[in-house]
Image 1 (cartoon, rainbow, N blue to C red):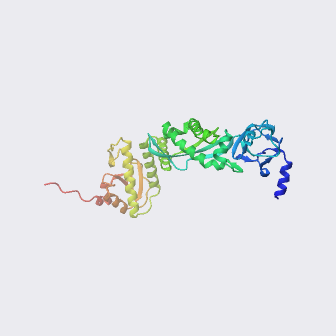
Image 2 (tube, rainbow, N blue to C red; image 1 turned 45 degrees about the horizontal axis):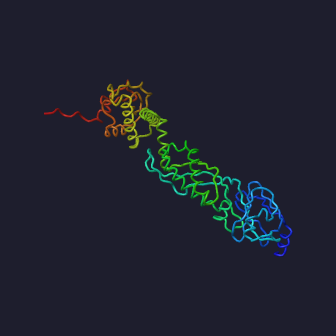
Image 3 (cartoon, helix red, strand yellow; image 1 turned 90 degrees about the vertical axis):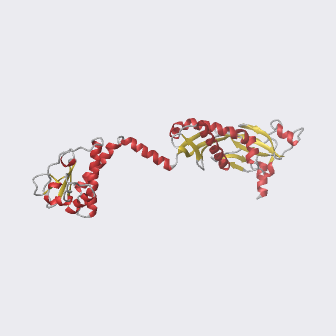
Length: 373
């Protein structure tokens, strides 16, 4: 196979690179023993530079165009080779093609969170990610510092280095800008441009590269902080928390009235909770002061419900709770949620009466205390 390569390269006198890769930065022209004919044709397409290297030393650089290689357009190579009166064919040199077009769709991100002192949240950790483009602006520096003798050099080979440089520069920019965490989203474009300039200052002279575009896609707060912000937003949407709480209590009372249940201990607890929520709602509606009236509440009892056969209904703030059994009422009295002045009604009664005046319930409140002395 080696002899065929030799014969093929002896016949070829056109040096060119038809780049079909998306992320290729540098490509070395394959030549048998690096031999190039005198008068060979060099084609450098738009978005390329061609660099001649002899014995590890960079010689001539060609911009886009078509050239016939002679001593007239290879002055530095002629000097390195010591050609006083031209060179004999073939001559030895390595030819590297460097892509000078923009390489797009490159991604960057902060591998570790960046600490930031925020006026609203205190110390917070931020993560960021985005995209950038890359372009070679100094082929000599690129070959010297990064490529070496590689046959082909892709953007991915320097990707880790560039991502580290961008992340480090982002931390510096964020610390200098001193922008509140909640305002960062409105500054993406401004911060992205500052970050791009900072990155270019660190790579252009040293590596011969440039970042023409850099975009910040997102700067993310920790999950716990985002949840806190969501809760704060929900509170802002709700508005008046006292009215919202009253609305919730009213819904709970309605649910309790439509689901009375049986006569267990848990149902007695449900009655106590219903009474407590009703009292809390009345305090809120009256500015924190309980209103007095028949049954201990300002609102008049509602019309008596239809008979329910031996079960008792309790009137709280114009709402009918129940029906409840005797055991439930007894538990409510023991828990302090039902007193003798609370209006009650059961089937067979002509209307609402204070519980202490109903013979069947008077025993729940015990005998009156004896007089003092």
